[in-house]
Length: 153
Image (tube, rainbow, N blue to C red; front, top):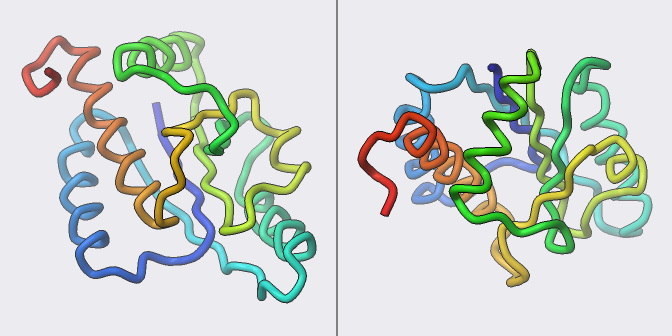
């Protein structure tokens, strides 16, 4: 199964970027993976920024993609639950699972409607770019769990 992550804005911290690079390398044997970064809205009008970001994100989502939206108000999963959910998506014959990380103001209604699952990493608020590292680490952990390989504790 192909996994695509679409995120608003680029990674600015060299430390987070290096961590993400390492996690992408670890994930490579388990999933085809790609990332798309879209430009953030200007922030003068948060609602307009969310609409603009959603439009840029939706351009990269194909009709057959299954879409999960990362948002604080979504469902929290254990790592084992994530592994099972990913396996269910793969078993359903899904070509591509697209994970979306919205912008600093959240996700526009158009993204919320398009997403079949709303996933929360935590009810806590994180620096925006940390979400990407956390998603990558959890994808890697879920792949290890699914194959019953050591890593998960």
